[in-house]
Image 1 (cartoon, rainbow, N blue to C red):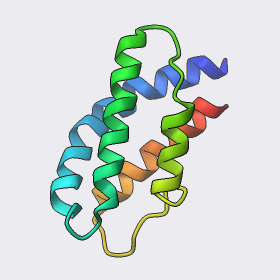
Image 2: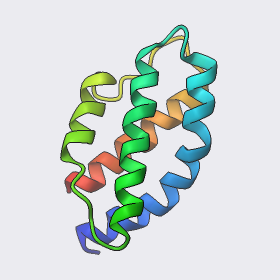
Image 3: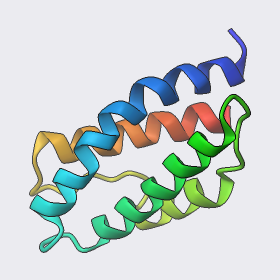
Length: 100
């Protein structure tokens, strides 16, 4: 399986789930974890670029670098729900597939 194919498969699957979860997690945990609002903004930018790029792989180097910095390499805080944890896991998987 080609690297780009893996990213394209994951993006379809993950963006659907993330599109639902990210706004909810921001609303629920945003007050105690203000960094998640930045995660939300970066995710929206990634989503826009992917949709605008259609079938081409967009340049997301800056966005994933920002996500890694804001999330401390997708480190899940101890006091959050499973949905928050899943968001970080899905973003990390997407990032890894993109970098591959």
